[in-house]
Amino acid sequence: MFYFLFLLLIGGTLTVLALQNLNVLVHITFFMWTTPDLPLGLWLVAAFLLGALLLYIISLFSAWSDRREARRLRARVAELEQHAASPQPVSQGPITPAPMPGMSPAMPAAMSAMPSAAPSAPAMPGMAPSMRGMAQGQATGARFL
Image (tube, rainbow, N blue to C red; front, top):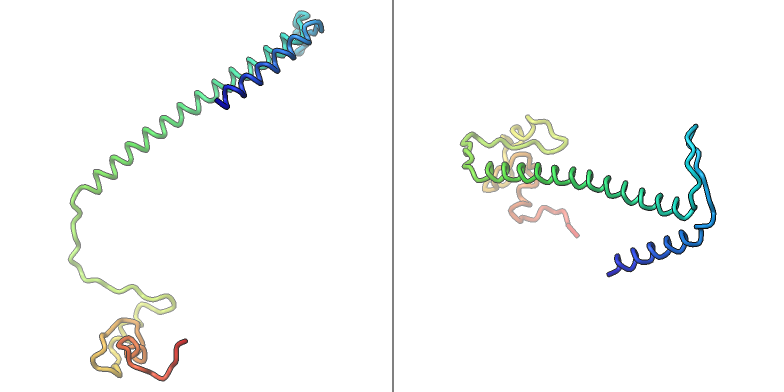
């Protein structure tokens, strides 16, 4: 409804502008080419209609491009869904821990080989021996707020 009222307002304004300028004759010169004398209102209506036509043509090209992009993306989604539905092989190799930031890759192996203060603490790569007791809930003397 809003678009209809907007179009009606624009069309009415253009009509009033064209009717009030029918008495003024204008010719347009483009380089060496000169048009015959025509009313200014006719030139205004022609310019408005030419602009609307160009906007429509540009929007058609944009819609065509969007439709091609949507078709390409639908094909890609179908390809990815087919890939996700196929069974993936599970690797049975050993899991190697990733080094923590700021540590060299050899450091976790060296730390896990160190004797721990709490023998029943799980050996976690990269965890300092003083932290293993904290992992089990033992008090270490440090207070946390």
